[in-house]
Amino acid sequence: MVNMFIVPMDSIIGGSSSISSISNSLGGASATTETTGSTNSFKDTLQGLMDNVEQTEAQTKVDSYNLSIGNMDDPSTMMINSAKADVALQTMVQLRNKALDAYSSVMSTSL
Image (cartoon, rainbow, N blue to C red):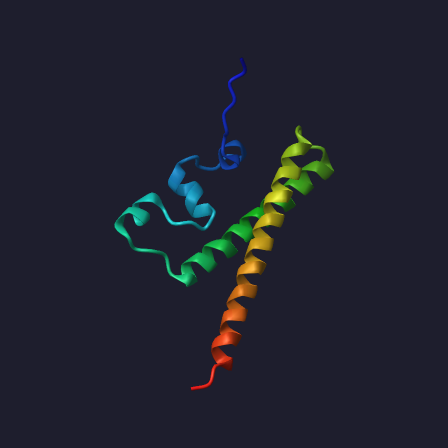
């Protein structure tokens, strides 16, 4: 029987592997925030999402550079980081679209 486990990508790349730092890097609330009942504001969530997009894009650029000069041992890491950047960007765009739809809906209501 083969034992399998999931290792966060941040710990492989060299970042912190604590759950709160992974949650924060994904733009989510930490476990302590969820238990107290307070939530992040929309601004904090959007800022976290934008920071995540910037981080994943920067990592993709570093991976591309390392691949082009031959410093990358595992090209699959670049593909995984590229997919993470794509998902982060798509999520941010969808959130922006929903916010704009909500804004136009509120502005079109008559008083």
